[in-house]
Each structure stands twice: as structure tokens, then as C-alpha cells.
Length: 327
Ligand code: 5GP
Ligand code: MN
Image (cartoon, rainbow, N blue to C red):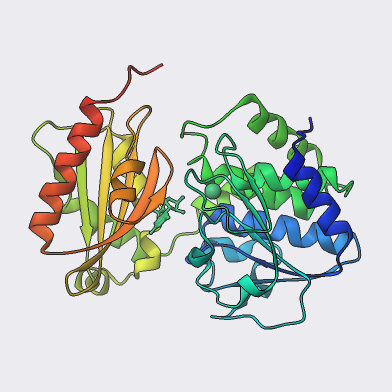
């Protein structure tokens, strides 16, 4: 199954015409950032191109098990002799947290609504369940064989960015691509085990502490979770260990949305928002200068925690009441 778009054709032309590439994605990379980036890296290498991946932050420990993840360079800036920067899974170039990328010919491949079109080529498709679906198209359009490494990264990205096939945005195409990935030798059991079953005990204890302190709003539809440095230390876990925790309250039938406050410093909080179905929490994240998708978004906000909780919960209640009827 192939997609055609003028931007995809321009990307193919631009890649063929160049030899040296730097690839980047958003800071605090998730499975789609890593999967998109490394699928592209391996494809370029197959073509005999020189390519390196540079990110602002390392991948979370479970992702380290996948091919090439340890070779991603972690740096706040780049200044090599590259002919193009391919940026994937980034709505804005600033989200890379890597400076210097703007000096190159920038190819922007992304599925985040509100992408700012910061590249010389901008291929944006909000209907892709993961940015890696688009990277898959690039790999195919370049005529590169879908090796097991490339397919593993595409599958990893789709599995994680759909919340294990929970979020809206999944299409027949998503499964078509996954089918191709399995044909190419991907072991879905191994991928799921590495991603979801490689916890340490500190992480499990921290989950227990955070979920034990969880609050539910008056209507019983919104879960409010909170973590600060002290709670993490006491449980023997780290902030990185809270990855994925925000999704757990959604496993309760009545819960429609979750807000997770992670204390950064003093009155500053990283906020993760999640919702089910037609409940759009992206607009709330955007109000605070953040972004993401309808069912999974984030932002950073500052203020007294009780007030922030009250305000955000009110906004989520409005989003739940104002949603279009579920399909
Ligand atoms: P998470 O809650 O897992 O950090 O992020 C959920 C989704 O929202 C991801 O797609 C992520 O890229 C996006 N996101 C999280 N924080 C921010 C932010 O501060 N700005 C923008 N633009 N997107 C964000
Ligand atoms: Mn994504």
C-alpha cells in the first residue's frame, strides 16, 4: 500500500540528491520519535548515505533494547557538514531542543495538528496514527527494502503512539503497515515485552504511590494524578519511571480523561493529558502553549497546584460535556 503526495515526491527527490544527513526528533523522545528517526536512519544507510541521529535527551530505558538506540547522539546543538536535517514527529523545530538544525535544508515530516511548517519541505498528515506511518511511506517511495530493523522501528512507533492500539487515528492503513512489518520479520511479542514488561521495582512502587494518592473529580469521570521529587525518591523510582502511568486511570470504565501533574521545580509542572474517544484535550494543552493530539497532549504550566488542578479539571469537564457524540 503506497501513499502519494507532492510533498512525499519532493522528499524523495531531496534525499536522492543529497549525501549527508542529520536526523532529529522532539526532546524527551517517545517511541514514535525513536522509531521514526531510526527507521529513517537505517533506510538512508541502506542507500549508502551518511546519516546520524541527534536528540536533546536520551530515550527511556525500555527503548534502549531496540537496535541503534544507544548510538543516537545526545547533544544540545549540531554543527556538522550536513546537507539536510530531517526532523520527524516535531510540530515545531524548537521542540527538538537541539540548536543549529535551522542552518540546514530542513525536511519536516510530522502528524501533529498545528505543525508550524518550519521546513524547506513540509509533509504534514494529521491522519497518520504515528509519524512512523509517514516514514514508512518515505522508505517505500525511496525503493528501500523493508529490513527487519526498519520494520521493528516502524512497528515500535505505531504500537506506542496508538497507546497499544487504543487511541483514535488508527486506520486500516495502520494495520496494513503493521502487517508488512510482521512480514519483514518483526516479532510483536518481543517488541511489546521490551516496551511494557521491562520495569524495575522502583517503577512499580512509584506507580503504587502515585495511584494511591490519585483523586477523582466530583463527576467521577476525571482522574487527577500527581508526582513530585519527594514521592519519587521515597518509592525508589525516578521521573523517567512514570512514563506510561498517565494511561492507567483510563483503564477504569467510567474514567473519560486523566491529568497528570509532574512537579518540575517549585511552582512549575509538566502536565500530561489523556482522554478517551471524542473528548478533545488538545485544545487545553494548546491554551497553555503545549500541544499534542486529541487524546494525548502535554504542556508546562506554573502556579499554585490547587488552583491549577481546579482550573484544568474545569476545562476537562467542559471538554467532556461539549464532545460530539461518540461513534
Ligand atoms: P506526554 O504527555 O506523553 O508528554 O505527551 C503526549 C503528547 O503531547 C505527545 O504527542 C507529545 O509530543 C505532546 N506534547 C507533550 N508536551 C508537549 C508540549 O509541551 N508542547 C507540545 N507542542 N506538545 C507536547
Ligand atoms: Mn507521534
